[in-house]
Figure 1 (cartoon, helix red, strand yellow):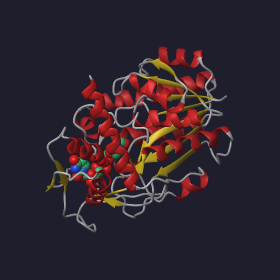
Figure 2 (cartoon, protein in one colour; figure 1 turned 60 degrees about the vertical axis):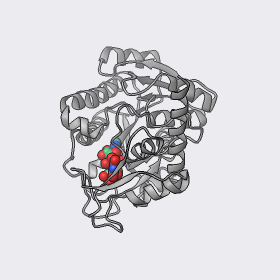
Figure 3 (cartoon, helix red, strand yellow; figure 1 turned 90 degrees about the vertical axis):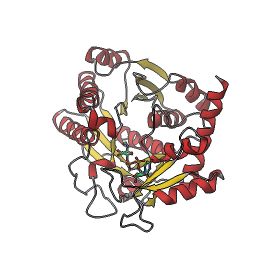
Figure 4 (tube, helix red, strand yellow; figure 1 turned 135 degrees about the vertical axis):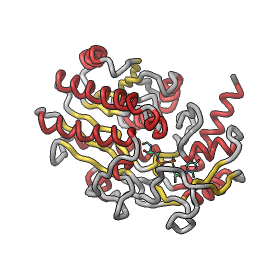
Length: 343
Ligand code: WQD
């Protein structure tokens, strides 16, 4: 059975990807420092798929510990999620983001080189495209200057992996550029953990509806879009997770056409903020308390993916629609509320 290291595997996308890997018969080792996740997620993963991944609590900034991890296991591949990801915080604390997001990646790559571990899948982001000139965004769309240190660490991370796969024999890398991951596993046992006030739209919607937050602000209604609100390509986190399994399989089956590849992971559909709210109200039956407010600084007006390359080369496409996304996000929020109430 192939063994996969999932760094940051206790996090939102990492935990969903671990479930899909185990469902496909992979052995999973999760390495996580639990700085932005909970140990309880491990039991929830086991409850969903009937197998408990090995868990190693580790600071991936510590090279000695990373090397020890790679010497204790023979990994067939690595999926690297571990990173800080709050855009706003990265503007306030850029050095934390450069240190954490880049040093962890460099240590993992170094340990891979030293132990002959060949395959890495990297968690990247559509934020590398900034506000594209042409829509939908293909993989040929040029990088634009990152709007935040967080986005810059994704751009630099891709370049580090590309340079490393060009320099070191047998090292191969696939970068997956996520559009807007939302929703939760149908079991409502895993989902986006709300540590602090959320930045992202979906947790803000569900926390407002459940009463944790007073009101949602819709940031901007004067954009050049059908209803004046921003457009994004929202993708269900389970669809996103499955793409990672397909990327691992592409590498293990030696189907890559080069040592470094990258793919957009989106549905190809752009939806406005108001369309997301309407879907949420429809699927939850809740009336959402929101107001129309000023634009948020730094927001891209509209972006959505052209996912053909991933559809064809990863043999993957997004299957879950916006209503499934909002319904699963709401089920997860209610599960969180029940769990809190039981404490
Ligand atoms: C989506 C839309 C907001 C909150 C960010 C990161 C990106 C990725 C996904 C990590 C925008 C609007 C939001 C609210 C609102 N993260 N909004 N009221 O900014 O597209 O992308 O998260 O990889 O890197 O940049 O996502 O969910 O914050 O915003 O109106 O309270 O919802 O203006 O139009 P974003 P988001």
